Image 1 (tube, rainbow, N blue to C red):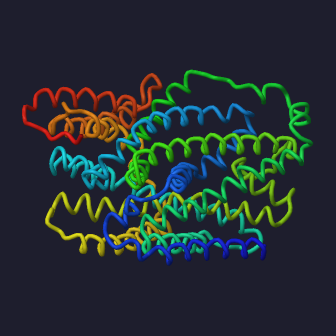
Image 2: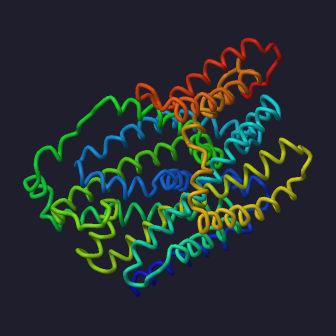
Image 3: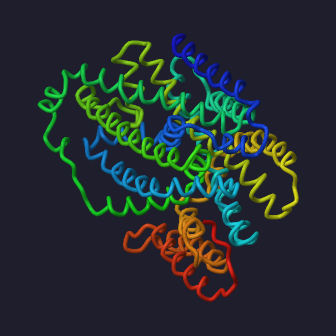
Length: 468
């Protein structure tokens, strides 16, 4: 385990070095939140991919592949299709962001429709990203605790404090520059270690693809498509269209071509990575015909690497797993800060100077991170109950955000009604009615949002600015 600690320290030192080197570049709001809008496509590509890749798409997918075979890859097809649609709009997002100095979805709504709908959007986005940052902190600490508890008896609390303090530090210092370039480091680490080395080592361990296919029943290699894939595609599409991290990366691109190229490249990485993780899970079926009792299938990657491969590979894999969750925490911490210190603050007090906003932004990253840490340490169940469902969030934001981006006919009343109606109808559909007929609440909420947006915009006769 000394080797694991050594590799982790080297990785943490690298993230610290990146943030220290880049902190001087974050001198204004565009620098702190968008990296001065000059990030090159390889960085945009890797930060897109690193933001999507998480514990569930790694540990969860490998565990599912162990249980059902290569059909575990099918939800990824829905993700890739949905992300491909978002790629069509990434260039437009970058273009208007740069031309009109737009920093976020609420900022776009403010410039087109005024402060009231922007305030509603900011409240919904802020609540969601703060809650998401907190739950990702919990996830990272649990991974660290699970893989190190046997050797070092590291507690949940210690693991949580270590990972949170590191992420808060580099995010506070360098803002989106630090987030993007640490995401780049994390993305390279994930691709090389979990995307290439581990699948190759696993295949070699089981005797190659031919022996793998001969050793397992045929149904493990059958792709079983069903109606749920279409549903997943719609749901993921709404998540991408409403997702502040994906808009932020488009805004931060140096040109519209870079935004599109980076998004497409990130999508390719997601598909490649998902195939690699699925292969790992299927190979584990041969290594562990019966899984050890008391251990979740989601822990098969650390278990398999620890017991079957050289210590250096185990150290690299553990570091990669920690990097996976850190790459999500930093993004949501920064987004939470932006929502509170620019979007909400400007909606209430539009005259606040940029210098003041920038200072508040740095302070707020620390405060938000520490508050989420306290909740995660003391009241984990309360933190989880505070998290606004991403389904509710997407129901409220996806259609109005795209209307603000693309539609000349969208009006203030329609945008406002769409956000409120989408949110309330999705809550009613899921929490009160229990998702009748198995229809996801995000689909119902988004359809209601669209209907109300159309009706409200038709009724509203006021002139609205359209950003060309």
